[in-house]
Length: 334
Image (cartoon, rainbow, N blue to C red; front, side):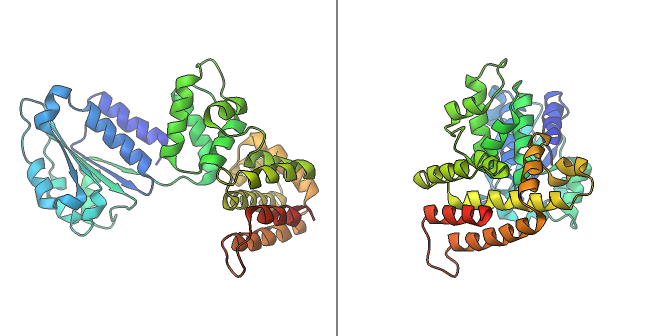
């Protein structure tokens, strides 16, 4: 799944190339919701929807009822639209749709929203939908893919985002695309197209400090700036709601795991692609590699794993975030 695939489906619908059956499935619900909502709002005119658009829910319906609706003809319209939300609740009987999917009615647009799961590729239903309609598999993005996704989404909206700003958003908001998109919509509504979105604008409109965040902590560690790293950790300890220690631990673990990989590369020019990071940030890995030799990085990674277990209360009494952060930095710098 990619943003390009989603845009391609929307473009086809806009041009009138509308399939009789769609299956949107996978672990990432954002694109499933986006596409089903687009079809719900755009395939039929408002005057046609009353008689020709039905929204069903998997837990409240049966496959036989879906087929019955799908085989009806539209009233005073070219098409009817049937959207089945939470179709994964029909997982035990969904294969019974095969006969309809193998010969779908041209005047019906049937949309299956199959969240958090996938239709079985070995069975006949998915093959029939692929043959006669459109399938989108919506996969979760890895954390290191989020900044690039942010950049692409904003470019589609005629905006540009600095690499640091995109990374700040990714670190703060995680990989919940719906949550990220809400913040991007907010930024697009208040920042002029002519203005590049930078760290200062992120601080102003999203509420992430441009000076005290995980990105700046990682940067301080990469430079060997202990005073700055401890100052940021202190800020985190005083603002635990916005800076949970478990997130900081995960991000620093990822950083040092990539640093270990960077050490192993014979051709450092391949680092951005191999590490899966924006070339803008490679200088940090170059600096950190000089400060933290490969053996030291291995020790640090083991220490971070140990602190991660402590943060989850495994094998020890739970520690305060302040203590965990202090131990984390001691592990890295000492």
